[in-house]
Length: 223
Image (cartoon, rainbow, N blue to C red; front, side, top):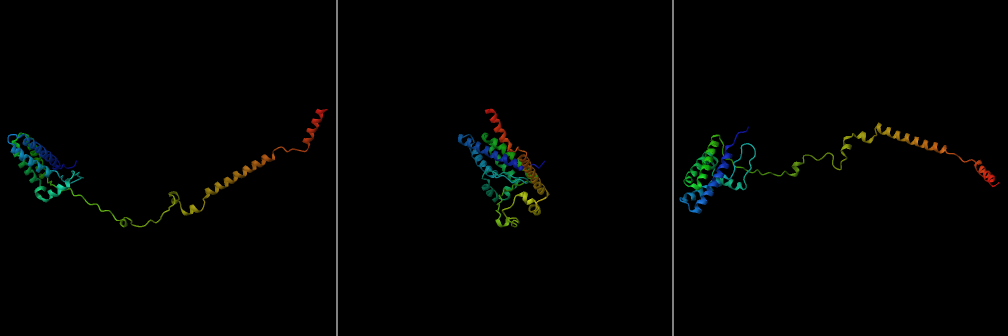
């Protein structure tokens, strides 16, 4: 079983906490709740947490699916260096941002979620994890000349694969099987001609006496 990367869970928890805090602050300000200035603070804190947590960190092993458009915020987060890369600092920041929003009922849920995310970030920092940006690698297209190592030894048009497998001597000179088939065909042809000739010889031949017998038979009938 692989090692759990706690920073991934902390990132999802903190992003959800920021959205919950932002929503609760908007509701409190719009309704002019008592202590609405805590709600205004919750709106600013929620926006800050969402911007900080939107870019996902690169995993140590395996691939990481980045969020839509996170490359723009990644460049901003990288500018602050260790202030955003170190999870100890991030855990302390989330804990500090969660405290003032806890004095208002509409933002207390976001406070609890952000506090849980702060604890998970602290665990990730103890285990030696840190935020690393997902950098896209540019793939260079290989040149045509580099891909062709050597020209083909047998340029097209090429013979069929069966003919290429045979040896040249076998292709030019017929083997014993070919001569046997030719002899068999000639034997069958001679036998057929002899049969036809015997049929012709055995047919009956008309002699000169046959017409005389016919005339004598006609004369007897007349008499």
